[in-house]
Length: 484
Image 1 (cartoon, rainbow, N blue to C red):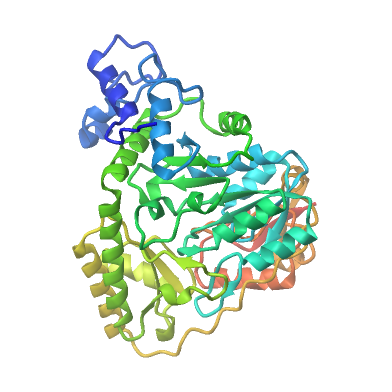
Image 2 (cartoon, helix red, strand yellow):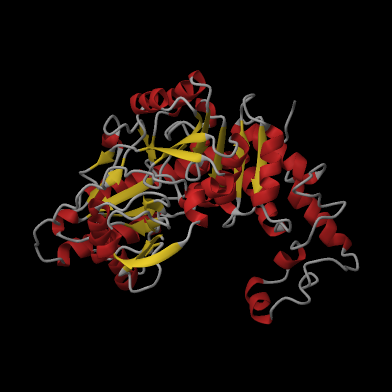
């Protein structure tokens, strides 16, 4: 079947509808640009509001596509090499939820990577599936998680043959890629599906210099945040299916549960036009991103006291590949935390980066960045290094505690009675909440797990270092919520 990737079916249908400009008695109530807030309209202009419309005979229906949206999804499937592709307007969160809802029946078990995003926990609550956690290896030198090792996956399937699926995050927020091809082979040999949270990997399909995409490596389903690295607007994502093992009707039904019944046509247009740009210019776009990131890495590693991670991580801690468009930067040898470095970059040099942890900060290089952006980042780091007094290296942060015992499922924890206790009283109690450092939204403890002394001490270290911890009951950060 031939696909004309120069087309943008949803955008073309939206333009056709805007040109007709019928008398409009549907939602939304702002009636094109006429009723839009004055301040927003003055700033944004009029045209964007002309395509904020609803399902019509011209613009199609996301939950039952037969026209423009159906054609646009088929173009996206052809581009990424999927059997089916679904547009998501509730972000990759709803994609992770739909994958797990469609893959498992209540009480069935799933291997869950310990560095999975918080949306996976919400999927476990919705589905009633039982998690069996598999922890990625830890890279102590950088204070970040590595990959999920095939040997560990094989071991866990032998210990838990009841698992019907496995979900992993690859690439991770930090650009760490697991050996998806090996993990897919292991899953399929054990009669399980491989689900990949590939939110940070949309761009990997458009450059041989980047890690290979999960679909090409045998994943049954994957979710991508097209807005993160592909040029679409925030919340614009994709769910890809490439597997005869997947119940496609269950995928559709699951998406009807977790996606809005009033999808934003602004976001649908954003997905459609971003796909077109990637199809026509994706390789050039990612070449630009890769070259800019490589330049930045070289310059940062030349700054005394600064270092930027690269492909030297591959082959350690089950890191199969590393996405070099991610700049994981540390000044820990100078005694500066990632939190402090991120704050100084913005407040003193007007440079904003994605996230920080105690040891590092993360800058994501996009095809849309410029050489000037790179120069500003590097120049700021050079000045910080030059002006910073010599200090001893940061005291090493202890590695995250090993997985604790999961006493009840996340769903059981969600509906259980709860109480709030002090940190000192929490040891031995069952957590009622997911507590995570956000971003990246990776759990430090999950609902249903037992608070150990090691976990409580580690959380305190993160809190005292300035980390933004989510999941605590109030802003005093002195209490936790547990099962009553």
